[in-house]
Image (cartoon, rainbow, N blue to C red; front, side):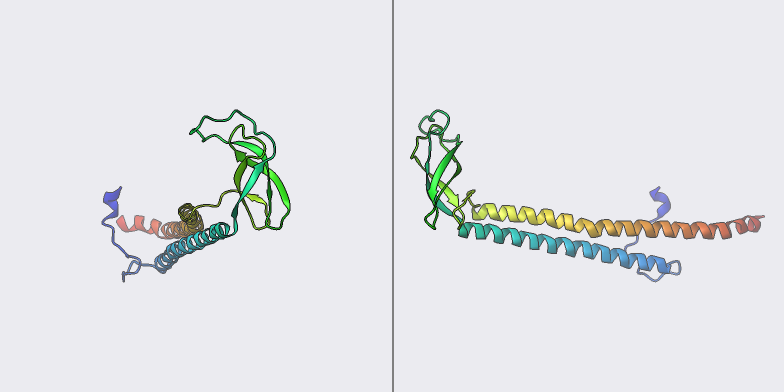
Length: 193
């Protein structure tokens, strides 16, 4: 199939050529605009999403504080052997918020922890339990990953739109060729005879 096409000429739609039609130039400019819009949209959306995630995680690191809580009742499970400390179970804990009010909630503690055992929990400025904030390196990774995913997703919109536009222009061009061939094709038979 490639033998019938001839060599590929770059930017042929912009070159002066007696066979170039107005539709070819319009298609070239529309596709260039679609590609530029795809790149700009993807980069801007990715950068904005990454910055937003990074700022949110930095705010969490600044606002969330470690607090010492005490186990309310013996935690389920048997105490782990010394040095094995990886497994954790849920248990009710009590802590005092910065405003002086006592709070209770569920936190992960070592199995078999007795009532009154201290455990470190993280709280927000209102004294509610939160998860441990991300480290700066975890935040950088998470924001970069989120930015990349948002950028690719946002770039897909103008890319798909450009491909749909190109498909529509191609169908329109083929319909024009069919109409021209239907008009001029019968005349070719008379010329050869």
